[in-house]
Length: 222
Image (cartoon, rainbow, N blue to C red; front, side, top):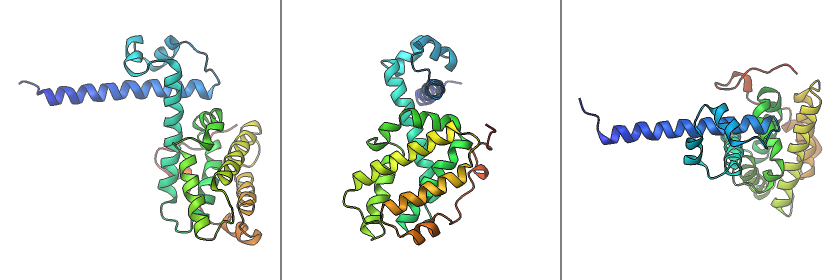
């Protein structure tokens, strides 16, 4: 029985996708551990692929790390879109995304370390949290929920709060992540023009339980 060229090409594409995914996962592990000076050989060994396979996908280690960071940003952003899709109020969408992000630091610490390692890019990245946060900020402003003049300034403020909170939670593993995240979210909403009482109400609303979602690991101890 002969194999059609289309089937062969499909298998090759799947193999290439698996190889690329393995390289990205290996690079993300290096970023999470703060080991960005590792040689390409070490990355390919961790990914269990050959050196030739690396250069079939990436021109340099720097290009791989960029792809690994963008992949982490986009995975995070897609998760937030899924979880906040049923919320109508843009201010509540913004707050829920922030509150979920804060809780992820205890549940998916490796992913969040990748995000923190590239935290400064959160303001301008076309992937992940930045474009979604800007979308929600602009929608909340148009709806009269936020009172800000410059959405980009608001995005920078939100990014700073996100990075600062994440670093605090990683540096202080015994801190209550839920309480810290909701306090920060409430303060951020007030900074964007939401009245104190309303900001508190929004940050007391129930949000999805990340540990009950398929593909999300249970919380790990410090």
